[in-house]
Image (cartoon, rainbow, N blue to C red; front, side, top):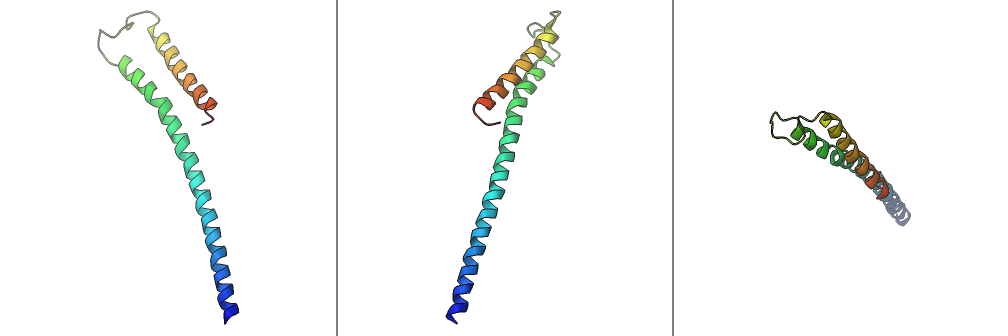
Length: 94
């Protein structure tokens, strides 16, 4: 009887350890996915803001009627994206 009880306790501990390993693995994968989605949203939120400002139909937007304003806006967007990606790379978030 004692041997059966010891075996049962041993199997229960093994199963508990296996479940803990599984939960840690799933949690780690979830953390990676959340980090990736957060970086994506942090990159695209300023781009949406800048495009939203210059996509309005107001005449008082600075540099709106300038010949190269479209290219300047794209340059600013690219600088924002690359600077954020470089920052995240240095912080080892990517």
